[in-house]
Length: 296
Ligand code: NDP
Image (cartoon, rainbow, N blue to C red; front, side, top):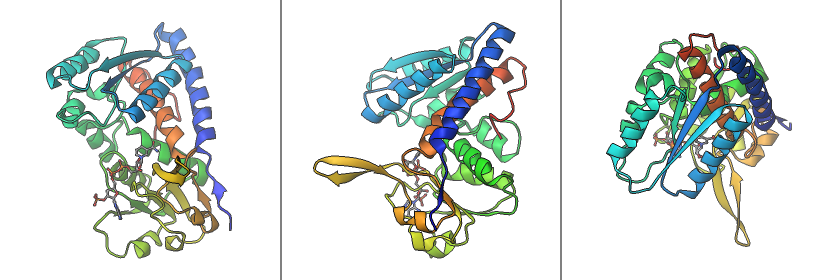
């Protein structure tokens, strides 16, 4: 069996094109464009790449992009002061502070300081609670992207056995919550799980969000299952080069029914969903119904 490729890159491009059309309509309707403020603290190379992509894609979708760069030794007071200014700025409808923050700065305090309605990362405890309670909230971008790909590929997920490997607040737990909301039967595995291969083998759907290169083996999978590989791991490719691999072994393509590639799977969905959340946040702040298909 050669698994069908779940094309996150293509899906994300279509989503961004849809968003650009919605943004053009919203501008006509309200005279304003949704605005996303991105705050980058320090010089982390990977974060700089992510932030530049976010800013570029925001502008390409016709939205306003507000960039704030702070030095790595900025005080927590200054950072929190900037967040409060952005909360009050009516041109800003979504706020993203790029994580990880340099040591000494509390991510939790930053998350709590962001206005819940502008929390386009969906990490504020009130948004976590809204999603858990099945109420409209802002859903974390990577989990939202995983769900969009699953629903696009499988349609109704009711009754599917789903195994999520990883229980981080940013990926594993919200993915599990979203799958419960979709009426899947969900098992969450983590580093203390016994007999992980047996647990993974239950899954009609397997979501791997571990951060360990190719850890989930082909022989752990139920033949024909759908695999969403969230992992992004850079490994040595010899001759001084590196390459990106996921959390799932490449041999899984011979066992799964469908699978996301790395790169080109979940990764591109994350930024597209950030833009979708910004449009959703804009609409809610304006008392408008968000366009269908941008959330869950
Ligand atoms: P975390 O390190 O926060 O969480 C990893 C999870 O994996 C933990 O719950 C941990 O368990 C579990 N785990 C670690 N080792 C094992 C093991 N041997 N067996 C079973 N479970 C294990 O990572 P994130 O959730 O932030 O990210 C996961 C991966 O997804 C990373 O590769 C990251 O780069 C990628 N990622 C990709 C994104 C994208 O846009 N595509 C966005 C965000 C992340 P425990 O809780 O017990 O420690």
